[in-house]
Length: 364
Image 1 (cartoon, rainbow, N blue to C red):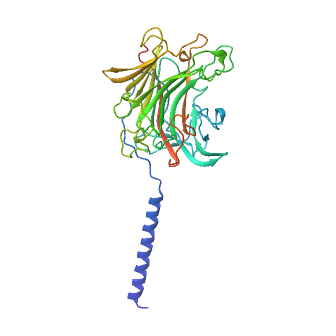
Image 2: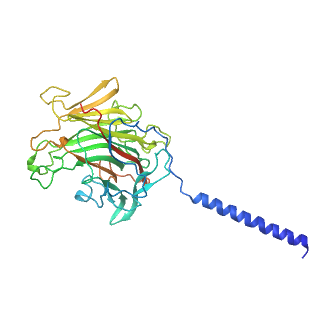
Image 3: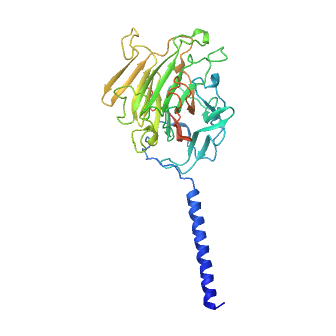
């Protein structure tokens, strides 16, 4: 073999090795998981009140000194709402993740998946602060969240609160006598609005459940008009266009509650849209006939409701509540957001940047 032929062969081998290296590098890049991107909605400015509790989710795993996992299927095997999912404590459903565009640093990720697990076809994540941290009047409770995967009917995410205190002499506190506060209820079937609600009972009924003994007052927030919408939202327009800035799944927003002695004020991105008063007579005649109305104010349309303290045995909204972060899959139309549709896409992730609790700077 001539020196020229030997040189050509060696050069060919080098070129082949280089091409193989380049091909392997391209495969590696393609296999990397793309981090989710969101248009960055500015976080609510730092509140002037004293920060008394927070989780920024900047650790490697969930901080179990602050949170509990809820696992299983809950009340009646469907979380009491007709859901199809089973909640787990696996990283597939609840984990900490860094590098999410628009987040301060780390994020809690709660992901709903379509998979067979313990006799169910869907899994989800659910955590709470019960017996570890709870708050009542005099506090601001707020979350910064991006329900990125919640885009189809039957998919949903909530930031809500349940009672963490018991009446004297009672071993339990029945729902809804103990109350419930929903700060953020976002569902894929209503992509352009968030719902905040207060649930309560009409009567103490010896702390026992009765089907008729429940009412709630809920106000919607329109991401487009930044106030209560002119008409009540209905199911439709899902999935939203990926570039629709007025869908809650488009990016991060702050969802919060200012809890005063006589009322709760719900806001999204600093826009108050629902005010609920605990006693009768704040927004209407003293006879209690009118329970809610929409007022047009200088700050926009605000839904006002009243009268959730109906009995002397227990006034729920004078007491402490713990917070819950949960995702789910609707299996019936009684599930808020409706039953899951066949075309729904999974996995369905929700990103939580932080949860913060402040003392109100003014409790009037």
